[in-house]
Image 1: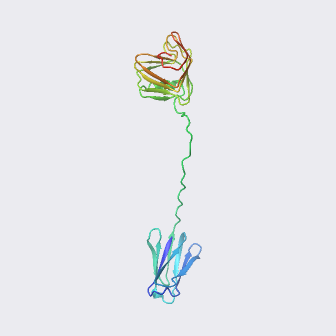
Image 2: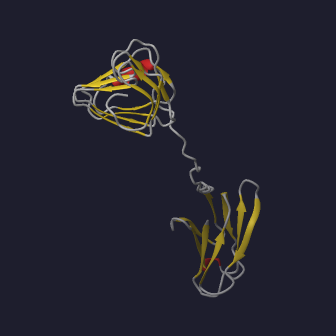
Image 3: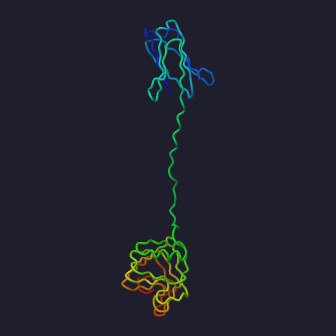
Length: 237
């Protein structure tokens, strides 16, 4: 943590002057030494906390001088000569935080989205550019009309089924899509749609465009058109 720089002006060492490095909290000597010969030398001073360097007199005290330099900054913390002492303090450096990698996760179908009829109907009424994820099977209270909706996507990341029944639909037992709407259904099941005229599950009119991907139709029944199971794009299902 610190370096002791020792100098002898005559160039023959400190001639019996010794230094002592004492830990203040315990008053115990941590290290000791001297400049055996020559004009200069260094010694490491280690320890955390406060320490006192004391330098003896020796035979020629006028020739002795020293400085203490902090290693990480290069700053002189203390200086003196024979028969003098100085106290310097240091703090422990924090250990670097361990480097960790983020945990590996396995992707699973998202569960964020709609799971009730009222939520689905409300989401559809937002109109164009809506992206709706159905996360649970939904039983319809009534058929839903989609009008003039552009770029509307209704999908399911978990294979949810939309279920109709005897809900009094005339055209489109689950959905009536009209007025140049542009709608995509993906990953959904359609079941028990019932209409008195056309489109047991879906009824498409008014130059609307409907795309259906990875979908399953079961028991979609209409008075004018019956579809028990469907996998192709047709206007009335």
